[in-house]
Length: 157
Image 1 (spheres, rainbow, N blue to C red):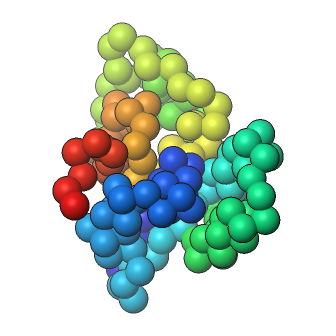
Image 2 (cartoon, rainbow, N blue to C red; image 1 turned 90 degrees about the vertical axis):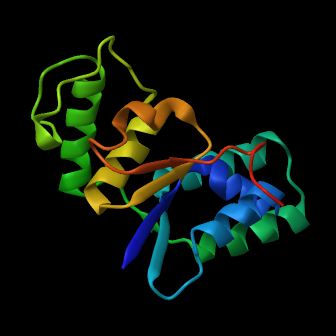
């Protein structure tokens, strides 16, 4: 069973029915029976905040709610997610902590935003491939989880 964690920007692209987001959905077979696609509760909070800040109307909010129902969220209170958050934060900050494969921390350090840390910890704890357009996760790829960066401009028609 393939597992995918969708970052906020992927959810936003799917809500807007962006070409690159439709390509991502098809490319990774997110709707297939052998794929489990979900998101972090943090991503849901971020996209709801985007809707509020941008004054989305009823039609766009209905589309958003429908899309959010398609992708369940994982809560961050899980002890494995909490532990992963602490380790990834310290490791990204250049501290030697227990990391998968005893990987050394990045040099120079790559401090992360707190929401991105929660999303990364959720990807690690769930064993999911993180799909994002955000490059802030690149230093974690192959160590803490698998990461696929979606280039919005380079996706084929």
